[in-house]
Structure formats: C-alpha cells, structure tokens
Amino acid sequence: MTILDGRRSYVAGRWVEGEPFSVESPADESVVAEAGATPLAEVESAIVAAREVFDGGEWTDVPRRERAEKLHAFLDEVAAKKDDLVETMMAEAGQPRMYADSSQYGMGMALARNTVDLYLSLPEEESNPVPVAELTAGKVGLSVRRYEPVGVVSAITPYNGAIIMAFQKLIPALMAGNSVILRPSPLTPLSSLIFGHAADAAGLPHGVLSVVIEDGSAGAELLTSDPRVDMVSFTGSTAVGRRILSQASGTVKRVSLELGGKSAQIFLDDAIDCTPLGAMQAVAMTSGQACVSATRMLVPHERKAEALELVAGAYSQLKVGNPAEDPGAMIGPLINAAAVERCERYVALSEENGGKVGCGGRRPPELERGYYFEPTVLDVPDNDNPAARDEIFGPVLTVLGYDDVDDAVRIANDTPYGLSNQVYGADTAVATAIARRLRSGAVNVNRSLFTAYAPAGGYKQSGVGRERGIEGIREFQEVKHLVIGDLR
Image (cartoon, rainbow, N blue to C red):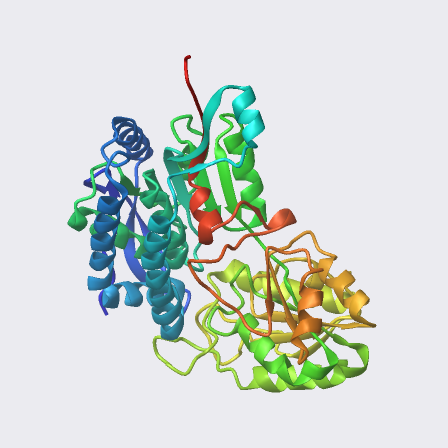
C-alpha cells in the first residue's frame, strides 16, 4: 500500500516542510503516516500569493477554454495517481474500497469534468430583461449582467468526503478564474495533497492553488478572517459553520456553507417493502457519516412494527469491520473515539426518553481495536426524542410512526435542519406532491441523483448557498450590472 506523503504542504508552487503530527487510522488505531502541519506564516504566504496572482490576472485573464484545458490536465494528473489516492483515503478515513474508489474518486472525477463542461456552456454576459420603455426613457442601449470571479477563495473540506468535497469546490472556483487555498480536515489531511501534485504537474500559475494542512485550527481561522480572502466555502458541522460565519463577518466576505442535517425518509403505506433499502443507504459505506444521511425513517403507525423488523433484518446482514482487511465489511469505523462515544450517548439518551433499541446499539465486542459501532435501529415514540432531534453522525437510524400524510410532513419539517429528504411511494404523483411540501434543499422521490448539473444545499441550519449545478458555479462569481448608453 502506497500512502501519499503528507510531510510537506503545497504553498504557491513550493513544497513546505511542517511540524510533524501523526495521522491515525480509525480502523485499527495505528499511525498511517506522519504529516507536516503548515506553519502559520506559510498559510499567510499562500494568502499573499493567491491575492497577487488574482490581482495580476495571471489566471483570471486566461480565456476560459484555456483554463478548461489546464484543469483537464490537472484532473489527468489526479487520475494518474488514482491507486495511491484510493489507498490513502481508505487508510486515513477507514472507508470501504467501494466508497473511496467509486464514490469519492469515481463520482468526484465525473463531477469535476462535467463541471468544466457546464461552465463552458454558460454565458459570461447576458442581457437583462428590462422593458424597452425603461431603456429608452433613460437613453440606455443595453442592460447587461456580467459574471466575474469573486477573488481569493478558502475551501475548507470535511473528513468524511475530503476528495469529493474538494472537487465540488476547486473545479467551479478555478474555472471561474479564482485563486483557491484548500484546507482539508486535520483528521484526513493526506489525500488532499494530491491536488498540490496535480497543480504542480499541470503547470497552474503559482499561487492559483495552495493546499495547507494542519493539526489544529489556527490556519483555518486565518483563512476565514483575513481581509485578503474574498470568500469561504466550507463543508462540515453546523456548529463550526456558525463560527466561520462569525469569523468572516468582520470583513463581510462571502460565505458558502454546506452543514449538518437530520433528514427524513417518508415511506407511504404502499412502499414499506422499500424500508430496508432506505435504511441501508443511510448507513452503509459511510457508517452514517454523511450530512445527507436520512436517519429519521417515517412510516405509518400501523406498519411501524413491520418496518422495524425489516430494517433490523437488513442491518443484521451488514458486516462491520476493517475494510482494508475484510472487503466484505460494509460498515467501517467512525473517524475517532469521540464519534463512537457520541453514538453511545445518543442511544442512552434515546432510551431514557422512551426509545427502544431494535438492533445494534453498541460497539462490536469482537473488534478490540478501531472505532466501530454497530448499525443501530431505534424505535422512538416521537420526534422530541434526542436521537430524532440531533445529528448523530454515525450508523444510528430512528424509526417514527405518523398518523397521515399531513402528520408525516409536519414531523419531517420539525427540525432545525433542511438538507436532503426522501419520499418513497408507488404512486409517483402522490409522492412528488409530498416532496414539494418538504423544507429541504433536495428531496429524492424513490431515487437519488448526484450530478454536476443539479444544485445541492440546505435550508435553515443546513447551510447557506449551493454547490454543484449552475447555482454552484455562480456561488464563486460576482454579478456586475453593466449599463451602456450613448453620450448623445
């Protein structure tokens, strides 16, 4: 197994040595590799270089088709190191190979290349639909919207999807002509260094992309507060998102946030047989460590016992273990001991408030090392149960009963979050009508779709702004109104 060398970070075309710290494997608690934390002075150097290269127009002024060619070459370099990248993701995050290879790398690479194509299909300028009477009254010939890059972007990514989240931020930001400083999670810093190697090999102008890693948060705080940074794009918890908003407020910089969720999956009476599928999607491969995970299952009261039995049966088939040693393990480790303790705490809280464990609910006793938790089904009496209110970020599913469709919609919307709900029903028209009533940035009716061509993001405390799709590209652009008239 070859792990990407994390002893150096990539700062504006230079490889910089840093203070060593250990990256731990959550699968067996061993040390994966030594990483080097980027000195704070070098994080500032990355900001300075990004500002200078943006203001100098070395990347921004390059025709967008040439930028596209450079970014395809950049992606080719990532592809050339695919095997090392997948092994690194598996080692530092404990992810099953299928998730690291197919989801993070495969879907991420498709997303990246399609984002380039989508960007090229969009206008850089377009006319405003101003009535002719207003134009002539003001002696204006044209009213135009022009899309320009924001400037210097800080991209801060999470541990659970370091590579795919980086693709979502880097490619639209760079295609739009911005400079970007990528700061991955300290828990999984190694894999993201692939982007430094790719920038180097593809010949991106120095300063256009830097990758800084750290063992703490001082660099991230600088990247979210420095006045030379124009935008912060962050994916992570709602609690950290609030802090970033506060840090960015002093310079009124743009902030795009994809935050936590407590999404619901509503099963209509004619779709109870699909509950095992929904339950598996919530926890398999990611161990429930996904902000979009629909960990509240809503079923008719009279079918609740049946649904619990079906889901418990499905979860009993999921093998828990170290994916590097057992390719059949569909549930890998959580990221650290604190994540396991959180799962334990919420199972206990659920029981204290009337919930019952349908299956799981503990650390697997046969796994002595690593941060594992069994796929767990909780039968909860109502949506006030702590396990139904809070994002647990582990393989814990709560099952709730509802009276009728209106009650199901009420329960689904009764949350401070609003990221990605689901509705299952044989009558697609009925299921879609319910989906339109749900307060979330995405609703999947019977199927899901991950694509560069459609936006994703949250309502309420699940985020600000959008990623992917046209809206995700426009997040990294300013809109300028050009008014053009004649002096005569």
